[in-house]
Image (cartoon, rainbow, N blue to C red; front, side):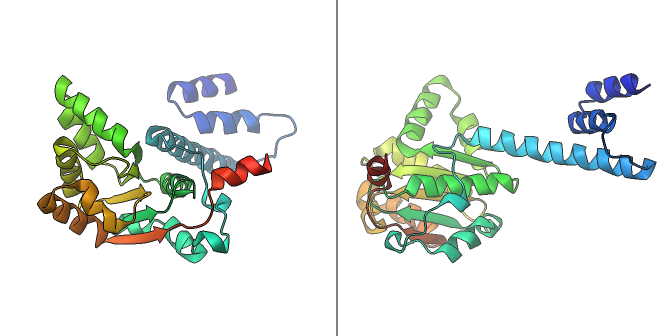
Length: 243
């Protein structure tokens, strides 16, 4: 009878329930009343589905780093407000469709911080995509050529949080400006965008390089954004010295 029940659970893809019921059959396992066993099986299946969804979300996001809020270094020289980070980690900004802008010189931990907030968003069930900005624009150019452009931009538009890392490493060309404008316009007031850049916001107008489009893009990004300006020495240099 137990073997048949386990087989049915497998067929129905009740993986959490299958593991829990197998565990309950062990000689030294806790003895459950019928009501307790049902509660245990249902809770185990619920936990398993939740964990698999988080794994799927984090895998699809393609983060640059495996990062967590708890592992961020809140050294005073880094100009990171711990209270603000923990408030952002609640991800209310995503529900409010607000943005985050992270600036600072190379190596100060912008990408790690962006990844940590992104991981936290995934753990709360939000859909996240992480891109190097230049590689994203290159991918969109290729999609124009092979006819998959609309599919790509629709996929981006559906993400609860879009992370654009290394923004501003090169001046945008006309195609890049159009891609960025379309992405930001699709998300404005609906979804959240996080941008990490070595350049201060005052220099972004020059990087976008076309006044009218730059004004439109920055108006939609900056005015609804939390700003984090990281300071201090390169974290990569610090890690090399320790090693």
